[in-house]
Length: 295
Image 1 (cartoon, one colour):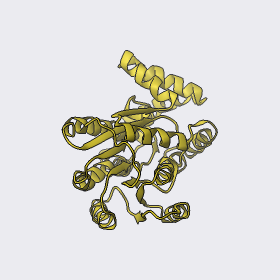
Image 2 (cartoon, one colour):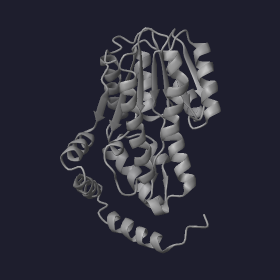
Image 3 (tube, rainbow, N blue to C red):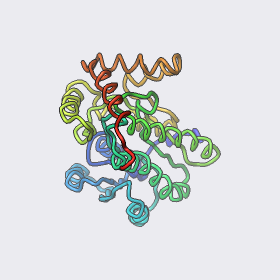
Image 4 (cartoon, rainbow, N blue to C red):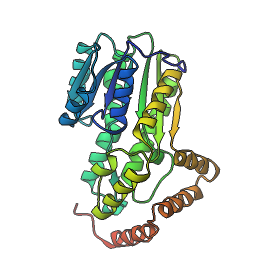
């Protein structure tokens, strides 16, 4: 492991979460580099809109599937392998956000976040890896997050899922080291995707505010996609995207414990949400006196 894919022209990529955001940009840019595509999403209209931009003589197949659903993913791998002559790149990009403190996060919300963000990656690796192993050189991309590097208040479910993707990916680095399959784990910071608009949580006003902030200030998905594709071509194992991801990584290395609070305080200040730390503390106090045993 460690060798890059080199030129991806003529090869086939599977992209989950392809209907919008980074996934959509990945599909478009890989297509323009000469790849065949299998585009996966639960958003069928979004996939159909993408189809209209994939003009050319290469093969592009669209697949409506929920990455959290094991049987759908099992069937997806069979369908994609049957439709394409070989599978070379798997990009586990599909994800969902959730903004709430631990005490305000229901077990059903945990199921949803872990189902998509973690099990979606596990399902992708499990069902597609046998096909990737058949070609001369292949590559997997797993989307973690800045919040897979450093913990943040109000992001317990999301951080747990993205830290788990990081752990899975780093273990796979070692297991795949002597194989023909490479792997990149990606840690983006704020990227202007639909994840904020589709996120759920306990404060709709906060979610709306964050979605607007991301629209005005966050990194463009096209730039993120270009960096991911470069990492595939070069065989880069770890990719940080956006300045705040580099800052979080440095702070966590230098201050493994206090770095969390320092980065959290800075983030809330930049977002003009300094009051949220007290809000979360008050929520935690209320949670401690509630009887949750009947849930």
